[in-house]
Image (cartoon, rainbow, N blue to C red; front, side):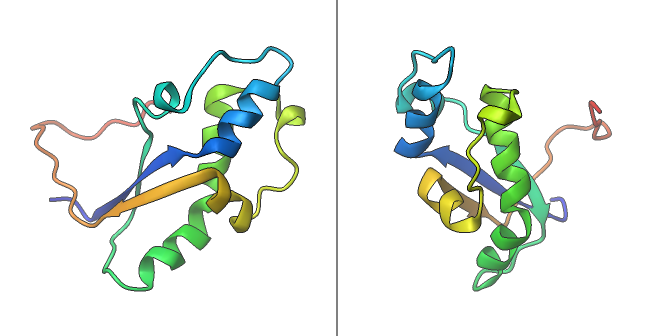
Length: 110
């Protein structure tokens, strides 16, 4: 077990609407986009209000990662990227138990 929690991000309809409104719109559905969701390692989580605190601390980074994963031209990103907008665009599922079953060191690609 590692000293992290994980947040799994699923897009909602406003994200799909944004994708379809891009200059070179993607032919996607919510099922396609949510087929392989991003998972973010976050600090340890004890259930309660900590989920809200973690989301408030990391939503902006997650928001940008989600946008950048589909479209890198930042001028086409939505201007409003506050927590309220994030909650309209994404569902977040938190998990407090993260098990590393690989017998090798973690490697960061960056």
